[in-house]
Length: 231
Image (cartoon, rainbow, N blue to C red):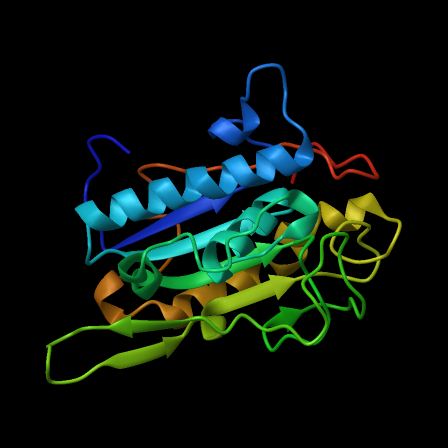
């Protein structure tokens, strides 16, 4: 992220349709699992690098479809054995995790019913689901004024994961149009959630004033079905 200007808030957006990240541009094309792994590396590098340059900027990450899977693995850690990803800890640094104030996942193949941050009608799971009973429970230790105190933050409180029952990728449905409709159906709710997580120091808290750059991840297709080309 060269020549990055430090802002009060920055939104990093991942989407299947975009091809700006290395995961979408592997020479000769990439298998779905390879692009997931490359996408995790790419988004971690982008976020950690930006955070090191602008440590006070609040971050919002929005992931759609394979981008949501990449975001989920980077934020909560793996493993994601279906995609050959074995790292169990988050790919983001502790400092970056602390500054990530909201994570929006739409149509995430890692979706599993029962997490506290689920939104939508799906009551089953995606094709690369987390295990039953799972919940993102990584804690970040913020060393604000050593040795005075340590603040521990549960990152799952920052997540909203949107999935509806007819979606064939994050759930077990058969309507790809549902998979492509989350922005229209849940966009306003997601924006409201993001605003609630950004502190008053970030101005309006909207994503529109925080886009000097966009990080995108994932253009591969699910292994057993054809992924949508947009979203």
